Length: 411
Image (cartoon, rainbow, N blue to C red; front, top):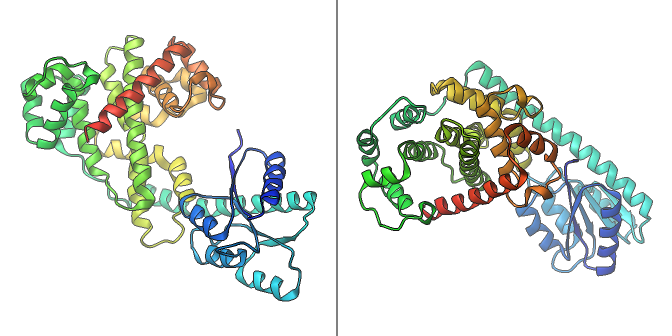
């Protein structure tokens, strides 16, 4: 499926806005169009969303197209955004004013449909090429630093390392785990709260940690240590990264829950280990958020688009490097390295297949899996490989949603 193209239209005349919407929607593939009625509304919309093209009328209430153009070019996040001005003005003074402020092009009203489509196609193509070039420079810079070892990786707390030993079947008693957890009052409270939650269908309240561990299970309690310690490492208050980080944690929880449920369904010997790997499956993205946040203090090209491109390109390499630095077991690292190898999953380990399938389910949490178009082939192929019907996968998806909601309520 082609990448979605986002276009913002600022036009106060309803009939013209409707005509633009129809023309663009029917001639440019996979387009999402947002229509606002004045420049001020356009500016507010741009602050909260990313667009590939802005089409604006000149004469509008509250803020004119020319004033909007000036504001767009002053903002470093939108200064290169293609800006097409619609206007009935063709006098030299007006044209010069728009050009001086950095208009990409203008088109006279009443506009010719063919010329409008031609200009839009040209702008979108040039903007995409420029953006990709900009992103590639940032990605190459970060990749080179990783290769040279210029990054200082965060330390993993000792508690997390001991939790991984328990999860990976190295053995520990309930008393050992309780002693490990009890030194952290916040973690203790969360584990007791979870043991008393509706997810575990608790009927009799539990007040003591050892009984909470007994109800949740030794390895699942160890997984909670892993979640608690790793989430504490990666924290940000930067608005550019905070929402993304929050979404990543929710996706990781959902992937972990789905992987464990799939593991139980296919009779995997250690479904709790699959949960732990699911939590860590996108740990490279968490690390990259930290890297990009530091770079944002010295570079002006850290945008929503560049963050997406960087994480897509480098999160596996960073995740593998981090887990190696933390001395994680090989079976964890292999899954992180290969769980996106969707064309070769039949050659991957059973753990990798399961976590990959869980990740795919989670990436479509907002719809039933039979409605999915993108990834439908690989979802079907992996389901067949694992012996899981689409209806079973949908039940897993729903239980993962409920689990994430339960975990969020504990914070």
